Image (tube, rainbow, N blue to C red; front, side):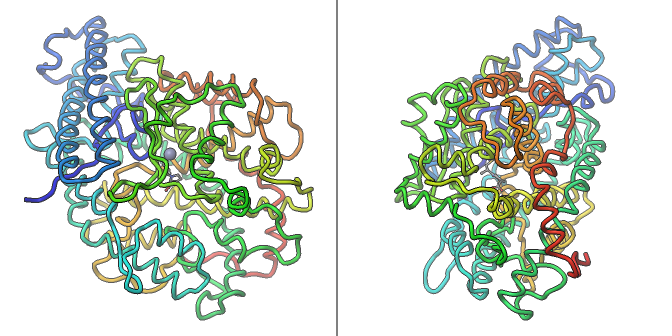
Length: 625
Ligand code: X8Z
Ligand code: ZN
C-alpha cells in the first residue's frame, strides 16, 4: 500500500509561512457576489438569506473552523516533526476533513451573495470563499485525492537525499557545500544532485493542478492562480499589474547588481566557467536556488574599498552562540521594543534544531497551534548569518499571530500574506546594523562611513538579488495553473523564467525528465510565493516608517529601532488589526500611506546604486532572454 502523507491543504492562521496555506490566508473584495446564489446546502439551510442569517452563518462557520483547525494543526505538528507512516496517515485524514469543511463553507458563502450583509460579515464571507490555497472540488473523494497527492509531493521533498562521493547528502548538507565551495565542479554537483529528487514529482504535480483548478472553477474563479491573486483587496489582474509596476521600479538596480557580480565571477573563474557577458551561471551564487547571494560576498568584495569588519557568521561562531541563543537574542529584539516575551511553552515545545534519528520537515516555519498563544517555531537552525536572519523572520510570524489573537477567527491572519512575511524581516533590518550588533556585544567597534558601501553591497546580495526570484516562482505557477504552460513544458518554462527575470542559467543542460520547480520547497509544499516578493518591498516601507517614528535623520541603512517602545507600540497596533481591514488600512496605520511603494528600497540602497553604476562603466550589462 502506498504511504499516505500529506501537507495541510488549508490551515487557518495556525502556522505561518510554509503552513499558512489557507482558509484565512487572504481576503478579497472582488471575490464577492460572482454569479447567482446557489441553492441552499446543508451548511446554509439553517441560515436564511438575510443580513442576520449571513451573520449567524459566519459565526457558526468560525466556531466549526476553530475546532477543526486546532485539531488539524496538532496533527500536522506531529507529522512535521516526526515523519512516519502513521503520522502521515493521521495528517492526511485530518486534512481531508478540514479541506472538506473549508470547501463546504466556501460554497455555502455564495448563498449570501445577494444579501446586504454588514461589512464585517461581508468580509468574512469573502475570506471563506477566497481563502483556500488548494480548493478541492465538491465531490466525494476529491479532497482526499488532493490530500494524498500533496502529501506525496511534500514527503518526497522533506526526505530528499542524493549521493555525492559515496555519501547520501541532505538538503542542509548540500546547501552548506554550495555556500562555501568555490570549486565550480563541486557547486555544479550540488546544484544538479539536489535536482535529482524531483523528476518523479511532475506527474503528481500536474494532477494536483488539474484537481485544484476544478475546485477553483466551482467557486467561480478562472483557475487556482486567479484565486490566489484575488487575496489582495483588489482585482486579480490589477494585482498582477501591481507586481509588474513594483518590479519595474527595482529592476534597473537588480541589473546593476547582476552586472557587477557577473564581472567579479568572470574575474574569479574565467570565461570558460562564467563568461563576461550574458547570464550568470546559477550554481556560482552560493545558494541552492540562487535566491540570495550573500554567501559569496567574499568573491565580490570590492578591491578598492576597506574590507568589511563585520562578518556575522564569524561573530556568532567567535561568541560561541548556539541555536537557542540565536532564538533568545531574536526574542530580545522584540521585547526591547516593548512586546511581551514568548510564552514558556514556546521554549518547551519548539523544534529549534534538527533532531537525530527521525525524519522532519526542515524548512523553517512558525506556528500557532491553538490560534491563541501556543506559539512555536520549527527550524533546523545552524549558527550562521542566514539563520540569524531566518530566526528573526520566524519570530516575526509568531509575534504577528499573537498580536491578532483577539480578532474573530477569520481575521486571525496577516493584512495580506506579504505582511506576514515582512514582520520579521523588518526586525532583521535593524538587527543587521553594526550599531545593533555592538549593542548586543557581538561586535567591538562600529565601523564608520567608510564601510557603508561594503555593508550595502552585502545587504543587496540578499535583498535585491531575491526580488526577481520572489516574482518568478509564481509567474511560473500562474502560467501552469492557467494552462498557458503544459506539463510537457514545465521545466523549460521554469528555466525560461530564470533567464528572463534573474538572468541566470543552470550550470549545464537539464535532463529531459528534469522537474526543477519541484526542488524548491514552496512548489511541492504548495505555498504561494509572491508574498515574499511583496515582503521584500514592505520590510523597507516598515523600516523607513519606523525610523521616522524614532526621529532618525541619518541614512536608512544605519538606522536601528532596537529598544524603541514607541515604534513597538505603533507596530503592534498595526499587527493587532490582523486581517480585519483591507491591507491598505493596515499599511496606512503604520506608514501613513496606503500604497505598495518601492521608493523605500531605492532610498535605503541609493548610495550603492550610484557606486555600482560607476563600477559598471564600460561594461556590457544585461542579458538576452
Ligand atoms: O520560506 C521562507 C521562510 C518561511 S516562510 C523560511 N522564506 C522564503 C524561502 O526560503 O524561499 C523566507 C525567504 C523566502
Ligand atoms: Zn515566513
